[in-house]
View 1: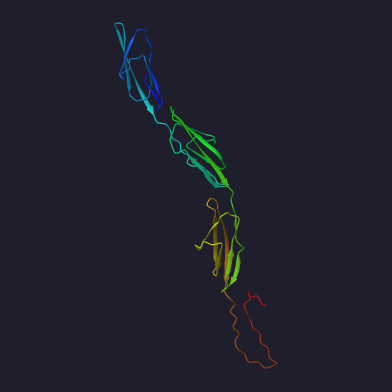
View 2 (view 1 turned 135 degrees about the vertical axis):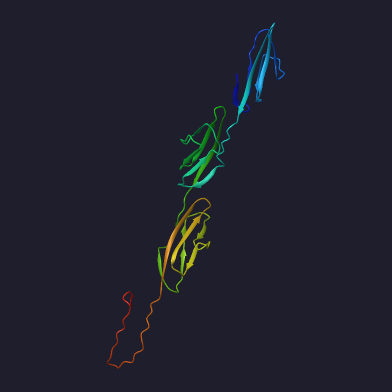
Length: 231
């Protein structure tokens, strides 16, 4: 009968009949031909005394699935990540409770996928390791008077940190003179953390009393805005 096998798999054709002679289209004259891998039609003529018999079978081959999970990865602790088998097949079997060509995970470990197309089976493995997440802490929100400067200094436990402020500056601290929200992102090449500080710059009080000439017995009252603090 016609046969379908995985590419590279050898197939055995033939049946031994005592006293018979054989002639295959491959040139073989044995009763059985072994380890046939070429996809083609195989035919044999069998001579048994005055009787002649012929038979034909076709060998078809199918591809070998090639799952590729990629290189081992170091990712940030607590991340949700997805592995792709990067191939198609009839059946997928993971050690991660998935039966499709992807698996969504949140734990480090060694993961493998096995794929079959009904004839061929192949697998791939990947190791996932977590890097501990880090923190970045900025000072509390601050209020300034117009003309003042304030140095925002970051505190982080990241190893080999890279700093990126929302202003575009790459430094551990940022000097500000204007109102706004300032965001700092810190990365160590794997994990990323950020924090925000709000700076509110207030105008200086405008107190300009008019010049007055008073007698020793006179007094004057200066009226200032109600939201001013006096000291």
